[in-house]
Length: 101
Image (cartoon, rainbow, N blue to C red; front, side, top):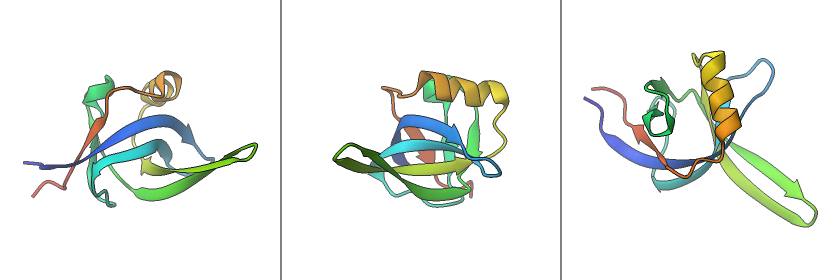
């Protein structure tokens, strides 16, 4: 059984050609590592996906610069990707679970 170890707030979602699909936002609590699982049920997708990459996204708008954490996921359907892109940002945080033991 998986243990909840972190919460994450999704601000945006995107896919870079030849790379995983990414959800970007803020870690609200805990620590996130590759291999943990993202539970997307809080945003309407009743699945868990393994985290395959943890990266940073740098944004610039005029004089403002900020950074978000991006989690790389695979195996999402096009419908799931479109839902995440269209409905971001989400008000409800998602749960990150440790690997199943």
